[in-house]
Image (cartoon, rainbow, N blue to C red; front, side, top):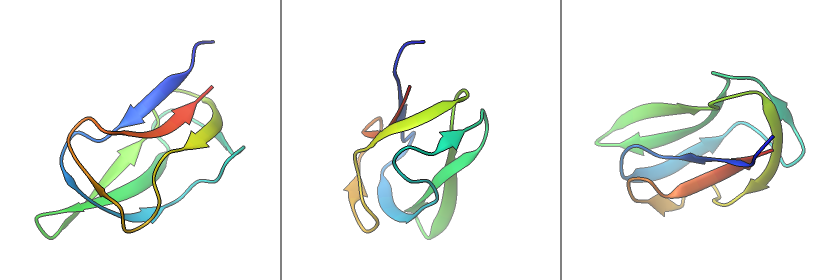
Length: 72
């Protein structure tokens, strides 16, 4: 399976990461939350796989479509 990159649909601040490197994740599993305009937005996995890279950390500011997590 090809590597998939989870991105954020909106700019904001990473408030919580709910997965770790090497974790097995399933489609629609919440991986992290992004705070934008005082709202918490959950970002989920697109498909099943294994977390191969976490490209951000809690507190980071991200823009729309920034890469966040890689899933193999």
